[in-house]
Length: 103
Image 1 (tube, rainbow, N blue to C red):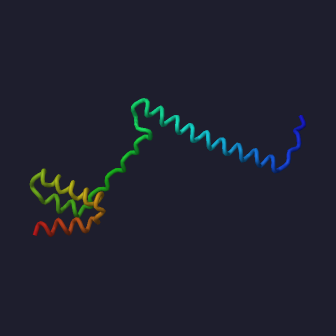
Image 2: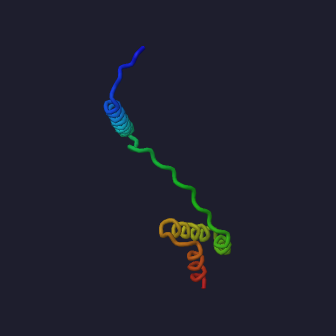
Image 3: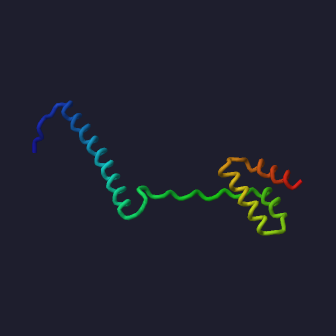
């Protein structure tokens, strides 16, 4: 079978049009998926999994474990994790604050 000769410009235009249509198709597929999820009562985008919590360093855990009450220890662990994740404090700074509050 003989293929017809086509100019390079026409061939490049064809490839550009193909790429444009593929990109457009991808956006429509994404849109349809979002609408289907919304119709089913889900969020438009799947939720991302939370990263696992960073473990408390052993030296800070040692200071916290000195307390006799389990409730107090759990409260201090939660406060340390909140200070680390939300406030962005360093573990050494959290330990220094805890030790300063102990006196």
